[in-house]
Length: 332
Length: 265
Image (cartoon, rainbow over all chains, first blue to last red):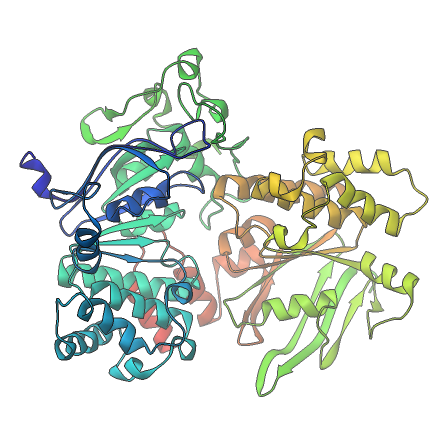
């Protein structure tokens, strides 16, 4: 273990996951890290592998998965942990917020029991301490202690998602994995939940991996962004640079196809075709078939991530990044 | 008023003490596109369901080409005529398509119900072409299709009836952005070709801007703002419309301020 791994709360290196019955790996060489207290967005469409990547931080992988590469949380290899170590990890260092809070909660248990039992069952906290912590966190997310005695069915979706955030912070985690935590919420509620996550990050110094399909949301909340396509990282970098000057045609195309309030009215610049099928082997760049910049090399050789000139942390896996400069979003 | 293909006049619907739809009126001109925007509980879906006839209004009228849709008419011919007035496309086509029927069978069944004497082979090809599905998709079952393709099938089936109005209830909400753009463009093309009227129910203001001419904003069952889409989005008058617009994530977005504004409203 080299010392650099200690710097990152989450460090995923060369993660490759193959599932039975598929012709290509569902994740193919994913490199990603989340620094301490950093908010990182992982953006992609359905089937891109974003959820699987985030779940790998807790070794929550589908049955039959063949895994290569490394996933480290604070330098410790998650993929080699036994069941006890993983349970300790998921009740302490790493926690998760899901898209649909109603599906993640037992409707017959009070919210208070749900909050308290995750930490008392592992013996990491006494019941009294856990209850005190639950009350503190409920206040932090804008609820009061009366919520402890309520059942999930008695509160709204927005409130329940706040309960989930409080629950995620019970074990004082270093890393929170949030998988589309606001997708099921109304826009005004979404803003409220995002404001809350930002405030809690500032207060508790928690690292956040925010999985979303919403580019604009990713841009608005994160320090850094990874864009995934067909199981690979297409582009990564500081949020601002990535959205202002995308270096991967897929990022540029996604930005152009999003209906926006600021964009000119009329037809959208849709991306033709479909993402590559898992049942087909993939040679070369996964985006080549839908890409207007593709040339012969794209169908033959998978591009390696390369840094943007003068910006080493902004990387794109594209043979033709340099031809993209200046053209992308304005081209619609 | 023959220029309006659809007109809703003073619609009311209550569930117990909750006024889900409270005095909602609007008009949709021939070949026009009207958006209904609102959050959950605003009454936008109940309004759509009243228009389609899946829900009865306590009071108010729905007129199609100036004729009252009125109470349920009896008899096969009347029911079919009613179906030709308004068709609906839902958010999840998987739930509204028969899992065992191929795409072609779905279209044939609808056509033989409504136009028993017409040439179905030609019309099926026409419809598939119109929604951008190839002949290979024609033999597929819904499960074998992608989300975007399924939504194309649902649109084709609705168009098969040649309705005056198409109600689209969050019809692109579940699709990925790149596919969503394809479907939105498709809907724009179809409207240009057929002059069909759209009633577009959505929570997404970007989508509203893209596909509607006019918009009404609903909150707690009531219409709080109405007007041409470009005007409403550029210069919203109602504080709730402003809040909705400010809540859309963008660079320089301030969720803190939105949360405060929401509590104040």
